[in-house]
Length: 81
Image 1 (tube, rainbow, N blue to C red):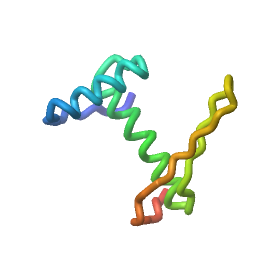
Image 2 (cartoon, rainbow, N blue to C red):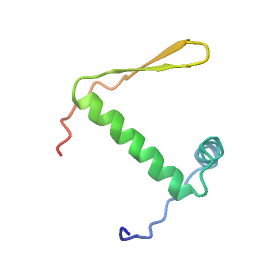
Image 3 (tube, rainbow, N blue to C red):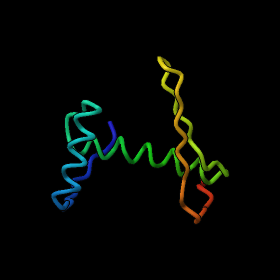
Image 4 (tube, rainbow, N blue to C red):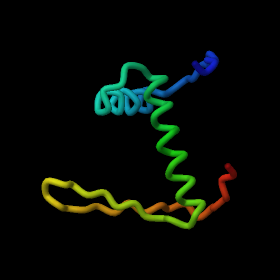
């Protein structure tokens, strides 16, 4: 098991409500788990952006409807492995 480190964050009320909303949507058990999941997703997006990808397309398999998410970030950096 990976070593764990205890850290402290201070969130304003709006941010805390947003975190709790994600916890419920994803059925996660803690704020730490929610933030870890969010960081992993953010890292995936950043890695794709570093490779030149700027759009994400999501599809609803039941309706076949699609939505396109476009990155607004102009700053690009190469993520090193």
